[in-house]
Image 1 (cartoon, rainbow, N blue to C red):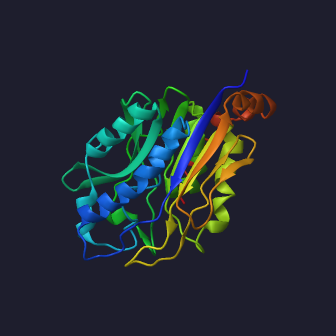
Image 2: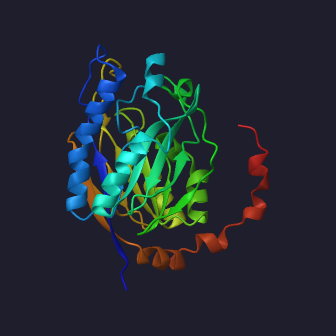
Length: 290
């Protein structure tokens, strides 16, 4: 019997591109820009909703400006409390990516997972942190230290991978081994650098691990950094690597797909990757230098 979960992704532009405004003002505007899409998801019956990377603000990592440390907050904290209200209102699981402050000077790129009753289930901290032109993330984030958790929500077992993580198949496999049925990857990525990989890597993770992937990306350009166009194209892909729904490259929108979780069993019985893997032969991988 089909086990259908209606899932959604929100892709949005940043509404304020004005450095003269305070961090708090910019964050509030970004939040308010997202709320109608969260309401739309609830009204359309979305059961699990994924928001984009650091959803309540711009992607500030192209610069190295300490003022953006002000954007960090505790997790759980004010944003998870607010999203818990929406989760309860619509009985909707929400994946909430924010800039986390653990303590003074200790910050992470984090996604909290809120269950459909509004309870806080836990968080994932981005493990792979880039440090390259236009993406100076090590200035803002420590590497994650929580491993690859999977959250037992009301509707499905949910894992999270964040943006640059998607280039590393090891964590994607760990999420599958930990029981993930749907992996959400909130991202902030621009045209020209890795757009050709956008529709290759994550469908490959879905196939190699026999789960669904929901990949989200913001849209538009963001000043003063102007590193390029965030090209949206948020999508859901099934365990066969087939695209189920896809957003545009330019529009603020909600992307929705019905995910039949029974397909996971069917695909894994066909492609016995978990049966045939040979972890005892991979020990040297941890010893090899790059």
